[in-house]
Image 1 (cartoon, one colour):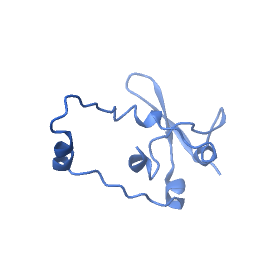
Image 2: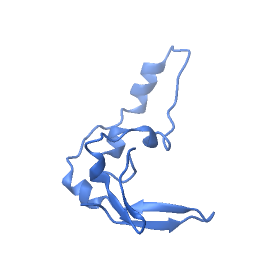
Image 3: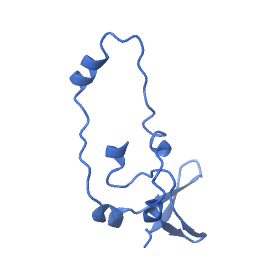
Image 4: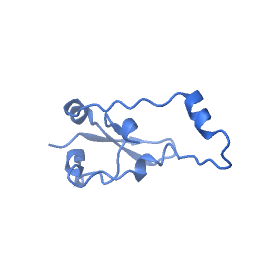
Length: 98
């Protein structure tokens, strides 16, 4: 078990971890939850005084992976094996879950 990982160096010199979740995504059932159309969303917010927005990037990092499923996100590095406690990018259902 476990996915392959590699590191990518950013332009600013920071290291970004890249994990290949293709095998996990192939073994997962796809959740299909299409986004609602913009006109539907606008009809729902008409007349309200306040509206809130979610951060589309850091929002993913706020979704907790169920403890029983964390081992499915295991990846190996030269420093050892690790697993995600928060939802990583690259899983088949990340968008639908978010």
